[in-house]
Amino acid sequence: MNYKQALNDKIFDVISQASQELNLESYVIGGFVRDLILKRDFKKDIDIVAVGSGIELALKVSELLPNKPKVQVFKNYGTAMLRYKEIDIEFVGARKESYTHDSRNPMVENGTLQDDQNRRDFTINALALSLNLNNYGDLIDPFDGLKDIEKKTLKTPLDPDITFSDDPLRMLRGIRFATQLNFEIEAKSLQSITKNAERIKIISGERIVDELNKILSTEKPSIGFLLLFETGLLDIILPELTALNNVEEIEGHTHKNNFYHTLEVVDNICPNTDDVWLRWSALLHDIGKAPTKRFAKKQGWTFHGHEFLGGKMAKKIFERLHMPLNHKMKFVQKMVMMSSRPIVLSQEMVTDSAVRRLVFDAGEDVENLMTLCEADITTKNPSKFKKYHSNFEIVRKKIVEVEERDQVRNFQPPISGEEIMMIFNLKPSKEIGILKEAVKEAIIEGEIPNEYQAAYEFVLKKGGKMGLNKV
Image (cartoon, rainbow, N blue to C red; front, side, top):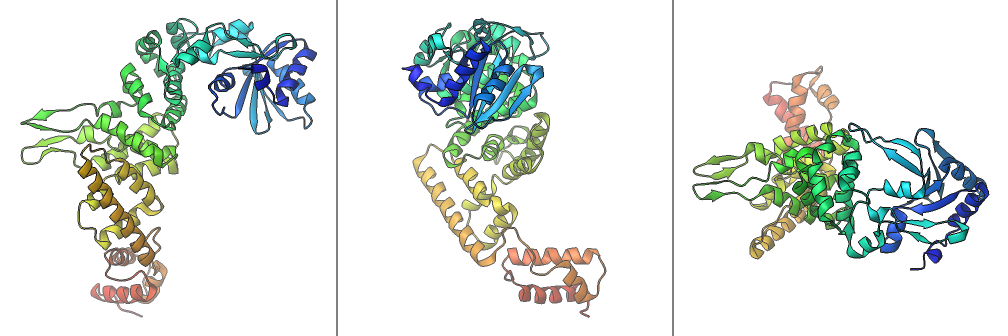
């Protein structure tokens, strides 16, 4: 590859000029170089390392650019960032790092390019391209990262025990890269992740979740979750998930392995959505099965109430990992708690009232719920697989029909509590709530249409039975 030709954007010439004026060396390093070699679309950020002050280099680059973009300076970290053509360019001075056992925040001192490459997580991320006039475009590859890219191998530049113990987040990053790039983690590094797994406990929930989100955003997240499982990291991060890896047999009755089933569901859902929170819903949809598992002689294995308990467990996971406790958490909770509803519906006669209730309870998320439930079909029996999907198609069509006719999604009662108070000359009381609930149930059960006049007449009749008189 002609790396000099690949650095054809004006920004690299400007960085090179700025470096020359400041009499320092500069290199583009890390993910940009790796993805350039892999011919991948690179992320919208570029890392520049300067042998000298990264902050000074950023300020000089801004000065030389026509629009003089604003430079964000992070003095504590010795880094600076500017935005160019929707790309974040981060500048950092080459540095050496040393760590204490209880923190991933290093003690930093100025260093050479080689020092900076030594501290990188993997050889494929330690590749650098020179932006200096005397060797512009030359690849600096002290750890044979190029060869590792060709072999599709992830390997640490230094002893993996040092690399992973110093910054345990690198273990998750390695598994994430293996999943994203379809690379293998070389045996010594993989063994080291297992050996150092407990070190992940010093990493914040936010950092862990960021990596889990990236794994979940890949085409086949099961690759990453199997690696997390095999190395012992998953048992520390999400023990609720590994608890599903337990198959028992009593009197000839067994149940499926719900851990491996869950990973299949996550892989199944990926082609149908890029919503990471729906993927989280797939990951957590069966977590309530381990604590609710019971054996009954007549029924075999049961998991009664696993959806409800799973929803409560999902909230605790979000709290423990410092995930957002807003509408995203509520969405995942709802998906987990409702995850069996369409499945039960598809196995029975699909009545209008059952579909209305499903749409009422799921609201705007009904399509997401159906996508999750279709992904939940992991049977290897072709005729069962076809039958389940055909049944779901019937449910989907019924949802459209019922919704067009009855409009119960994001239900707004056709008659308000204030109007009910006026009809019967009532003050705020429990009777108002009883009547509103009765109207809702009558519409869902198909006793009355979702219209004002029908609801008004229903309220008069129901109120009369309750001993209320119209004014």
